[in-house]
Length: 143
Image 1: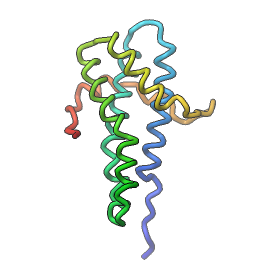
Image 2: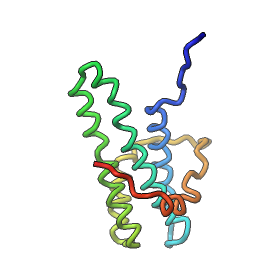
Image 3: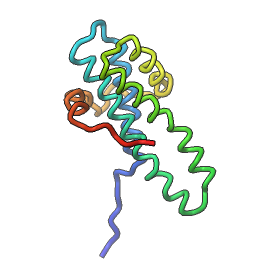
Image 4: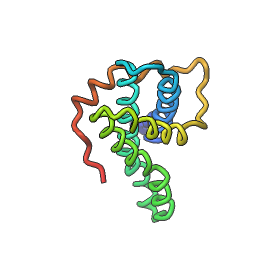
């Protein structure tokens, strides 16, 4: 029997989510008024950052198994912002505090602004329906 090779690793998922975050932030910056799409975009930012934050431990598990504690801790610190910003953004979106959402989106933009997305990307519009998903999904239990 041959080995099963997982082609969709956590690192690839994280990379795809970061590209989708960058795309959503750019689309959000183009919004002139607050409408259903704006709500979907902000909800998608929350969901994507929560998913990234949840997958960090799975990434560093192999490093910790080999005793690379510094590398694992540094990686956790590099991605800690996703947990913090997603929590604040979720709260601001629940309260519909659009003045509070703007600086949080700016913080996300500063983190993913360097990401280059090709003109012919395959991401589509992953934020469609994110508002309903966010409302139906319970708040995650993160540190």
